[in-house]
Length: 352
Image 1 (tube, rainbow, N blue to C red):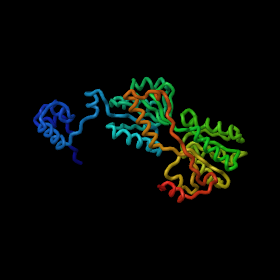
Image 2: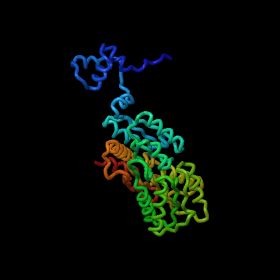
Image 3: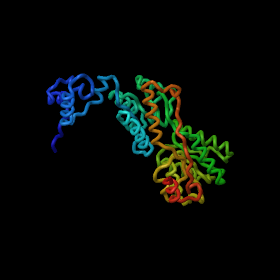
Image 4: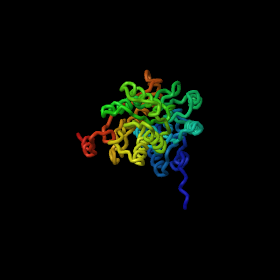
């Protein structure tokens, strides 16, 4: 295997053009007085060498970074991939580049990720996982602007963007109630997280509002993974008085219910109704298409990046310290008992 060519430096461009490093820098940045012939010569030499300016060096020189750092817990998850897409789509036309780190959910990994990004002179941070306390985040940020995504940390960061979690769960419960169900189970994730806590509280509030037959055995809190969903669903379905419907706080947990129900011969939706938070490309394609609450994660990333650039420029105004909420929509499919045709949904999506 042959080694690739070393990266061209500014001094290499200057040497090839037979000008000073200062002149080469000014020509590449479009500043300073020089003849058009000299400027074009430097540009031609830079192109010939494949020279690309260092963003870190530029930020040190100009005191203005064009790098944004982003930390997510699970980049393989479709939700976080969509967030990143939305962030990049907004940042790139503004001249910013994104540095992304998957830090999982451990505190030490989060601390390391923040320090790594700050060492790269990022102008701001986007963080989609909250494994630290507010005072720990403030200490790590060292004054760098931060927007939290899908989480809200009181007294840390400039602002946050989160989903209408409680409203989404309320829409699901109301729809299940419309199908005649009164004994409804709930499976949710870690309540210490913004989404887990707000969705659980949303379910408990809806259960009281719609006067459901609710006892503590019907509310299961677990991890967000598929295996956790399977275990929680089996506990609900094999108990002495199982629910006739289940609402889950994420698509992984819903898949866990589907798996658990199939393993013990419980048919969905004739014997058990199911509705869940989250929509993905495959939910209409499942053997039992899932009734869901959907939201636009790409748009969520877009708004997060927009807030961050406003924070960097000091233009947040009344939005400082606030949590912007992303709207949700109920999509009715067959898992709840509705009549449903994926062809009809496709036609609706493609309608002018």
